[in-house]
Image (cartoon, rainbow, N blue to C red; front, side):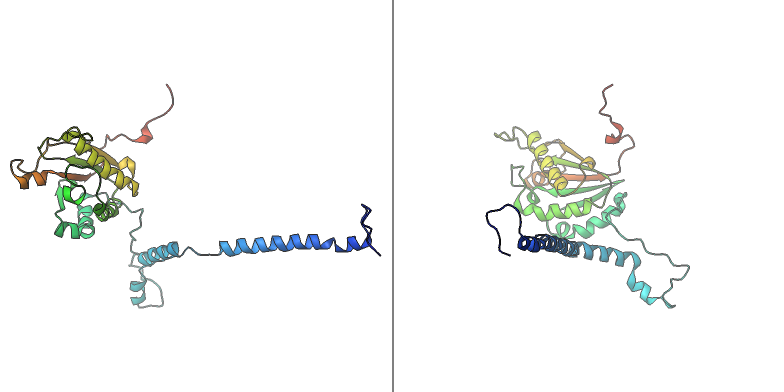
Length: 252
């Protein structure tokens, strides 16, 4: 039967080919389904390796292989505890050991000092590791140190004081009207850099002391150089430390 081009009513030939529309829709949907299944089946290699390393550390596969038996752990043995990111250090003494490991090259070669004072750990960072003279902008060469500091501080759930210090030479520029301005700006920039790298903002306190707390003789060039520094003091949270959990935004 010939197709009638002047009629709106479908001819028998038209009805026979209508299944192609449904068939093409079905094929398109199946193609979309397989694309979604393929995409969801891809493994994030980085996360897979991190998880594998964590499980290997927890179950200590190497030690388990040395056990005599038939793959059964002896009753008097305990599974070793892994060092997950959630395991935080709460002791300055324990953190000191980590500091010597992570910051070793800066301690030996670049004048960074680590001091344990009572229950606090103090890191003294010389000006030259972070800034140009008379400036609070972090230098390009400071990134490696800041990355290492972040690696260390991320292990601790403790209070982190970032303190800026200067020597006694007065400064008065368009950007920094006094040593107070310079020391505070330096402390803020170091603290903000650590926070941007993942340190919890609620754990950080920023302070600027200007030239008020010297550790060297300001009458000598060497003493002034020692005084131009940023100190990071890590200590336990005081029992009366304010917490955001204790504040309410409700109007009384």
